[in-house]
Length: 328
Image 1 (cartoon, rainbow, N blue to C red):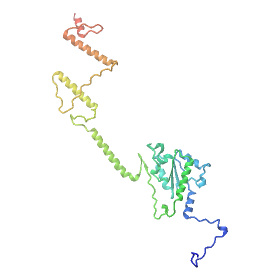
Image 2: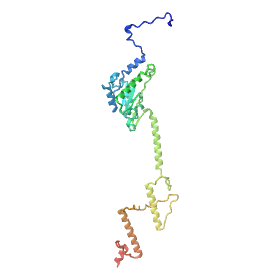
Image 3: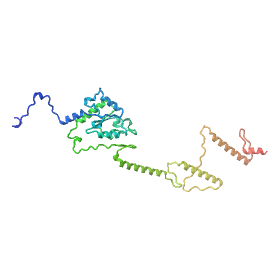
Image 4: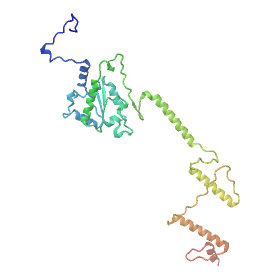
């Protein structure tokens, strides 16, 4: 018993001459096959990875097998952006501007370590740590630089992503879809997003106020007689002032009029004593002259108080002894 209801027209049989020429597939498959086999890359390179990209276009690898031999110089006729090389902060605004000018559907392939994460220049002052911080990336190809085989594998992965898409869910075919593009960053003292200018200005003003407050706190003069904070060393001017006070007090004590020490203040530092020579070292000429002068002054004082003293062999006679000889 047949399951076909009575009265249903029977389908016409396909003629034998057409049975080998009719294929059944989906609209998405045909649509994606056409896009994947006519994907035109944008013609630009940034650094050494561009040499490997050129090699993929040569006869050995032959991208024309996939309909990708036409590299367009205009972003409005390109489907694929291959970021091949080091991305500097100066180049980022131009890359974002080119990406915004590409029509949908569009794809981005980050080629090499520099375009992926900054590469060996990651900590550089003028290199961004990956182009994915500014434009959406579909496929990453590692390497420094990646081989032509690696780039070819990455392009095949882009094709696989294309075949997984559907016309019914494609965002560029939805009603009311607005492509406002990505905000082009601005290169000033550093690269920044112009939409965040107010936040950046507020953060800069806050940092400036904190720096000024710290500077005022560090340069504020301490009260008179206040001891320096623990762990801090007196400034050279403070040391010189204390030495001058110590010399003045010492001179007043010798004359019998010793001034009182400042109340509550730190004890003044004594004048610096001459440093003793190192063990086994020789005295400097200045130190020798100073010691000879002190010795002559002591001998002169002893000769004036107790008469002339006989000069020791090999030593100069004192000033008092010389004066006595002249009187005789």
